[in-house]
Image (cartoon, rainbow, N blue to C red; front, side, top):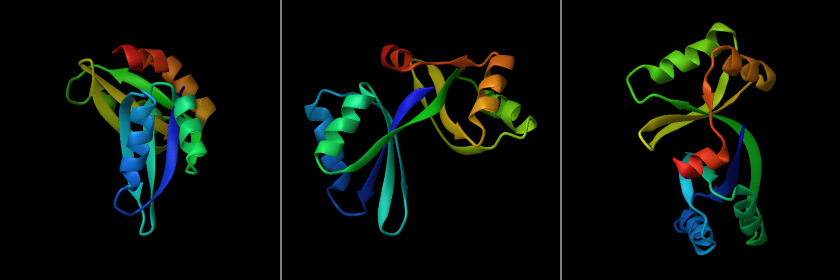
Length: 140
């Protein structure tokens, strides 16, 4: 599993820029971002180099930021590879709580959280899915 940074931000102009500028000034590279919004605030999920440092910097700036562990798997970049990977979880009754994906270094990357972490680990192992680490993300 890798560390994902989650930051609660107000839905107002400049809030995202503040986060991005703090990370930029610290030399932290963003690998992927995802924002989910509600009426009053958003949750910005970030995969970055140096996630612990990123969290500390944002907290010291007064932001509500925390780290959580998520799964990251690498897929071949062809149609259907994500569906095939997620099917393994669905067949075992493990729900995907949220997921986002991106291409990096010619490979598909799925970042996700499940409703059963231990069972998900077993499914990944049993199906020989290629798990990637934070170092892998930085080097792709």
